[in-house]
Length: 103
Image (cartoon, rainbow, N blue to C red; front, side, top):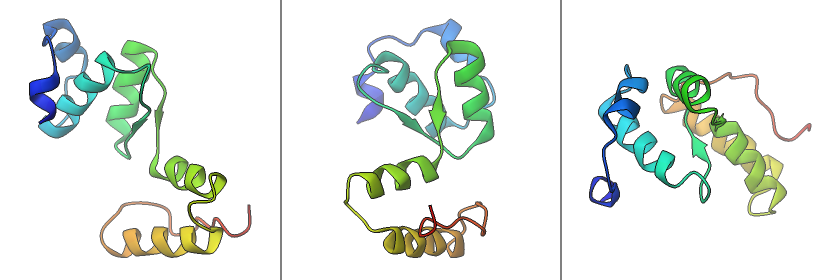
């Protein structure tokens, strides 16, 4: 359980993350304590804004993760297109113009 792994809840950090939903807030707090080990993936603009402006941390989008999966040869560009189109069809709010096959 992520919330049990957070050692201290820094009130100042919580204030700097104002506007995030509970899940995003807990994830961001956990990430800030472990930012040397992980990258933060989120498709919420407010998460990017809060982490970058207040903590100097670069937050990545889902497309970044998909691109890394292609580079690591875990999936093909065609697979990536299919995955991306499927998540968009299931409610992911992303650009329908993204294509990994032509990069």
